[in-house]
Amino acid sequence: MTMSLSTGLISGMDTGTLVSQLLQAEAAPQTALKTRLGAAQMAASAYRTVNTTFAAIRAAAEALSASALTSARKAASSSTDVTATASATAVNGSTVTFAVTGLAKTHRVLSVAEWGSTTANVHKKADGSAQELTWPIEIIDVATGTSRGSVSVGTSATLADAVKAINDKKLGVRATAVQVETGKYRLQLTSETSGTPGVFAVKSNNEMVADAGLQFTVNETGQNATIDLGGSQVASSPTNTFSNLMDGVSVTVTKVDPTRQITVSVTDDPDSVATKVQTLVDAVNSALSTVKTYTSNAPGSTAALKGDFSVSSLSGRLLDAVSEAVGPHGSPAKVGFQLTRDGKITFDKAKFTTALKDTPELATRMVAGGPATTLNGAAVPAVTGIAERLLGVAKSASDSTTGSLVALAKGQDSVAKDIQDRIAAWDLRLAKRKETLTRQFTAMETALSGLRNQSTWLAGQINSLPSS
Image (cartoon, rainbow, N blue to C red; front, side, top):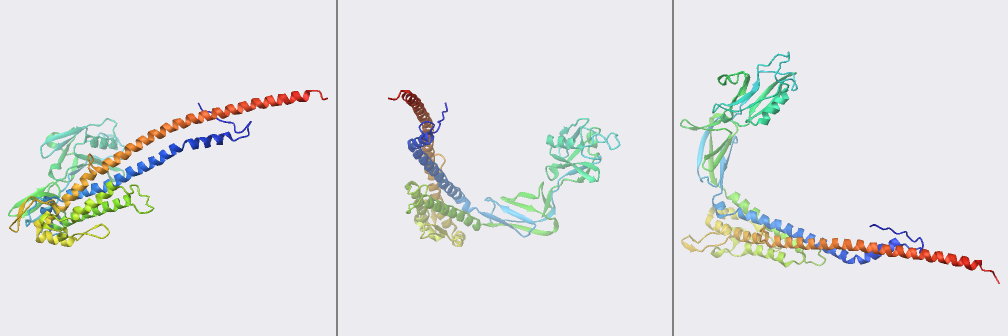
């Protein structure tokens, strides 16, 4: 029930304001809860922000396994008209030479029949006579000689309706109405698959399978891309990309030139490894900066996680993971890692790349670690590399199930939920209190009104008494 007050009708007091002020005083505990709610929500958000940076460390570290470091390859082409890529399975030093003799083409046909517009009846010519192209039409896969399916349209269907019906059937061809001249449209069908696998024929309802295609003109015949490897050896591909032309090597051709020999070669790619290491270092520095910002304990700091040791201590673990010696291999500075005075990490990419070329086993074990082995004739124990150590720190913080930052964020979520429930309970309590105060002041005004009436009556009685 909602009640309202007449402000000062009898007493002259602003009872509405009095009620508001009394409620405001009684709501002090709820106001404090709202402040705590804001702090809890801010802390939960801060934990998740920090967690994001540790998740980035984890992703970057996982990309630096020992196999990733030792099997990085790149492929180079002697021509700008051919691009090449190499995967980890590519063999260092392998080459292939070829000439591009053909590019892949996509099969495309155009109907002999014409229509005056896309809204014209697909079964009729402009003069009203029947089209030679009769429905349903059937799409024949030329490679296998089998039917992919047929398309039917109603007797009142338009050319636009026929286009939609063909596309809706999803038979490996895309239909469109092409305006060949002003007021003249034809039906074009294009294969969704390039090369010879996409070649098709269109059988009109009035054709035999052997005669299929008479109602359509072939504008472009689907063909495979081809390269001449020499010695009468030709490789072909339905697309312009030849996947695994060599083990782990794919090439893409863009121009035909049978007279030009193009060489693709595979080499190690230390630069790509160094780039991955740089990504890891950048991720660590980002995490360090974020932790410092959110846990700042400086005078006047309003950081959401001010002085939170559980978070700030993660910075120390990251720095230790990068600075501590890697077993018998010594300081990470040997391969380009250094700590700065302001608590960041620097990475000398050139120094690391040189180490990866000159002493690949050492550089690999420094970053990715490795099992017990023999190095330069001496037995070397198993070691945990920099990337592995950083991965361990990142996982302990950001794992979705056991991560400390995830647990801290969820903890603040629980606190916030509890506070929200308590705030809601206070809303009900204050609403009831307002109702009570309103009733009390209303009763007071009513009582004062009664007293005022009595006073007026008594004054009238007194005034009516005879004077002496």
